[in-house]
Structure formats: structure tokens, C-alpha cells
Image 1 (cartoon, rainbow, N blue to C red):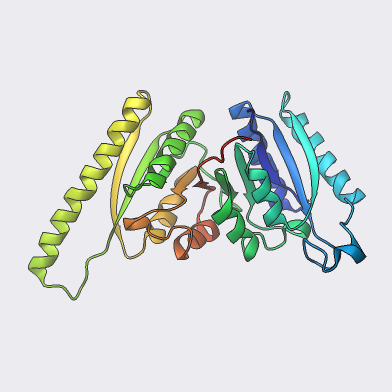
Image 2 (spheres, rainbow, N blue to C red):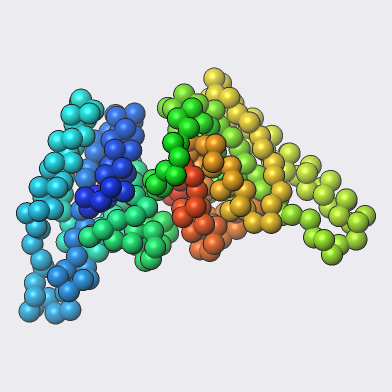
Length: 293
């Protein structure tokens, strides 16, 4: 199955930036690109209050022109890129989640208007981040130029979701011709603990972190002999602080869809929200692929 790269487009600068990023990714992966516009019912919701009275709304001509113009601009900049456009009746979150069942990757911008209003400010971001059926790439607005040669950074915690994230991150680093940084976050010291206990606990934690990173790095190097891999153990009060700080020099940050240890509750609490709202580079949430139909 030749899964496409899917991107949500609403005509906003953020979504057009995401579409450009998605086009580059589609070219890198030799995949088709699907531009999807999830449009809402005139009352403001994805489903009519009474479908017998209102029916399913029709696609709009303005949105179709926007999609077709975006597709034309992308194919001009990326010769050979295969692009399809589609309007989907319903809320943007539901539209993208459904598209993700058959996608290689779903790409979303971090701000939007129209069909993707408030993409990362409310329920849409939560829906796509938590319920996607394939990896989801959030393209953050760049406060400064993203370092093209920067590394791909991935959070490591020993869980199976993190292991999948590492595999995706390694593939991304190879495609981009850059290095891979394995980041493991350990809790900061408890200032109330007895100094001797702090020293003993710290030494044990350092050894455990080093062992975890060494094992993951060995597997990555075995699978990708030409890839430069750096092991980076860090201590932080909160894992999102370490990830956000590290993202400043990164081309991409990859995180698993669930985790334990330093990344517990990754997509059900503050870590995921902090990362997608404050990271300085794109963020890839590594959801496992839905089985192909």
C-alpha cells in the first residue's frame, strides 16, 4: 500500500507552511501528497444538529480553489510530486484522524483559520495528537530559522513506544543526512533528601541511564552503520523542559505516543502539550501505523 503524506490545509500561513513541509517529506519518501480541507457545518460543527433538516453541507468553491492553487504551487516547486486535493465534511480533527488510518504521515500546522481554527489550542490538537493512526508531525512556527543541519532528537525511556520512536527518528536522520541524539531525562535531585541518599541514588540513576542509552545506541548503530549517534543523559525537574531546551538546536524532535519514566503520560498530560506549543522545531509524535485495509 502506497500510503500518502496527508496535510491539513485551510489557506492560513501556518497551514501553507505545513503543506510545504509535507511536500518536502513526500518527495523524500517517494510518496503522494494529499491536501485535505476539513470544513465545518454552517452552524460551526462537523455534524448537523438535525441531518434530516439540514443535510450534509457541500464543499465550497473558494476552498476548492484554495486547495487547487496550493497544489499547483507545490508541484511547481517540487517537480514530480503527485498531489491530490479533497474536501471532507466534518470537523478538522475527525477528518485528519480518519485520513491517518491510510496515511504514511499526517502533517499539521500549529495555528489555523476556518476548518482548522485553533488547531493546537483546543480539542483538534488533542484529537489528532492522541488518536492518530500513524505518525503525526506538528510544524511549529519558526521563531528563528530551524537549523537544517541540526540533529534529530528522540526521547528514550525504555518503553516499546519509545523504541518505535527511535526507529522513526533514525530513519529521519538518515533521510536528512544528519545525526541522531538519544535523550534520556532523569528527575532532578530532591533537595529534602539526606545527602548520602542523594549521592547513592544519583550514582544508581546515572548508571541506569547510561546502560539504557548504551543499549539503544548499540541497536541503532547495528541497523544504521553510517549514522552518527550521540547519547545524552540529562537531569531536569520536568521532561518537557529538557526536550524544549534541546529542540532549540534540533531539526526535529521525535517522541513516542506513550511512555514511562522520564516521559510518563506523554500524550495525556503536560509534556505533549508543552512540546507542541513551545518546541523550537517540528515535533513528530510516533504513533504506530494502523494495519492497511
